[in-house]
Length: 88
Image (cartoon, rainbow, N blue to C red; front, side, top):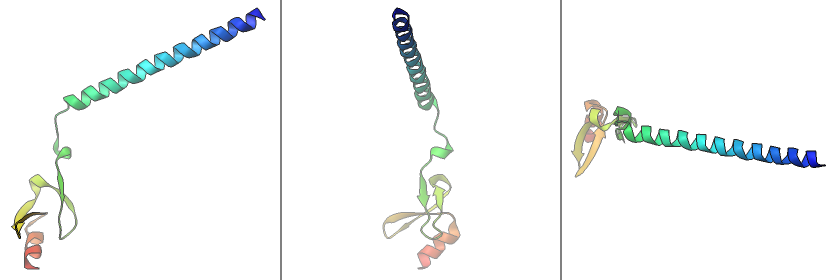
């Protein structure tokens, strides 16, 4: 009976240690990912995308053709779409 009780206590201790070690490893991974996100410079993929009202495609603002229509700035994928929109 004493042997079974000792084995149960050893098993509970093993489970506790295993859980605490894996919990610390998860926290370390999460912290390193957060640090990497903060240290990473913004890239072209993070640029704001806008919808072309004519061809319904999304384009980055830096490569778009913009035009002020009725006091509102519209963004187009190219001069063809801009001209189609203005001629409507």
